Image (cartoon, rainbow, N blue to C red; front, side, top):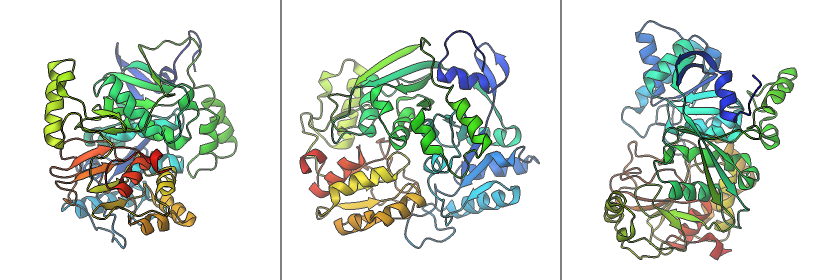
Length: 471
């Protein structure tokens, strides 16, 4: 690393990966890790082959079957939620084996959602540049990686060159200060931030999450926080590494070993932002009085405390916000002044790269133990990875979910997005996922985003419910 004026974590990592400057605000960067799934990864490998090229650095490419594969127990090698899924799955499988990528198939004991698998296996690590054909790649910023989502054509370029041209963003630091109260989680923190800065507040920024509340979060909470950076339009979101990060990564399959580990740790410890380093924007969020959050509209910015009410569009500060609020209430079939707690639900869903890790399932199990899902409510759990699923089963968490009335699925992206299944069509869902857009989980599906504890409490109550009231 260079010395001189104080630098941010982002500046250190970016500068360490610059191959050459392409202009005053853009650089050609070295890419350390490329993660591909069968949806857009299949397009990238097919395009590369059709162009007559081969991967330049196969050992840095990781492929996983997770986007289109079915989550149903007993699934087969090409069982898919999409008509085109079997072809994409086979294309990815064949190319991975032919080119010698690190391949994680549907029945591999390491299988899972890319952004859950990457930190679990040590594919993602502090100071690394990691890209994937998915907008939620920023998730692995939770272990101090500089990670971002790319398209299939960019993935083809990385396969061929292990580089990408990138415009250098501005920097933002979000400081979450204070201690979280009982029943409040990382999901509530990020939803509160998006409600504060808006769904476009992060455009053009690389965002560092800092503050006492972030430092006290376990790695899985930090991954949740970074996951939804894209929901306020930030391309990059990250927590610089600390001793919690180092302890989490020790011994992971693809983490450095022996002397390489010692050298890596020494490098990682020099990455956090220097005292006195400047950011282009500073944002503060007070966590000391933060309540569980739940969305009421069709954008993550349309969010409020669970003990609050659906707002009146007339109270919006400008015409655009008022129009969006009116459109949201029409789509969600809600009226101004309706208490958020008590809105009846049809589905309770726990899954996705946002909130389907072991700690998430544990938090939900605390609420579900000894209770039953309300009659008429569909309750579904899709663990974020096979290791998460097996660890939960070893602890008896699956029995708690099943006894309560939840379906217990295999790991994959599942019902986070509407890829082919209309199961949740025209229903109201309280969900641990990351997007509540119109039709995101199915035609006319009305999605409320919340933490796993809130989803579990809502499943029991049959309506949006505050887990703290259940004890």
